[in-house]
Image 1: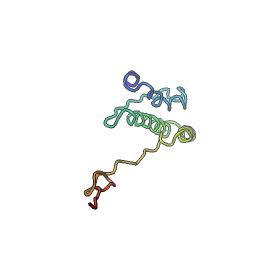
Image 2: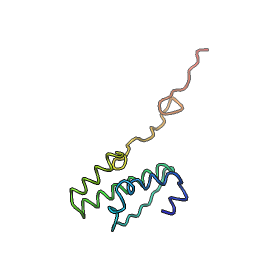
Image 3: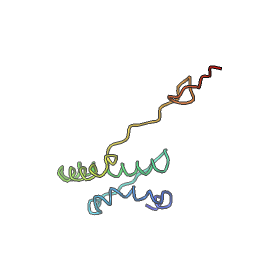
Image 4: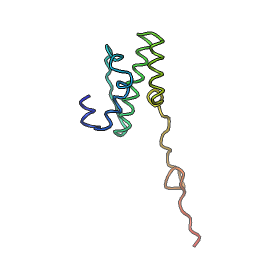
Amino acid sequence: SSGINAEYGALRYKVLEPVLLLGKKRFEGVDIRIRVRGGGATARVYAIRQAISKSLVAYYQKFVDETSKKEVKDILLNYDKAMLVADPRRCEHKKFGGPGARAKYQKSYR
């Protein structure tokens, strides 16, 4: 948690959202370590947040019962779908005939 406080400031509450939503009781006996590579500060925060949420759901499925797993999953999904489902959008690559992915070079008639 110390790295989060120093690096991200206001975004650290985003990382703690799963804990704040579900309560500390549900995280007892669970040890989570997350290593993030690539992306900017915001993307990393959202990746950490998603990893915490997904790992807790997986833990509940494997070691606890199905009903409590469903309960945890529903709480997270009702708050924000991005907690458990990744955003598949990526940057479109540049193509020939223009300065970007879709834009074409300007054409002058004179």
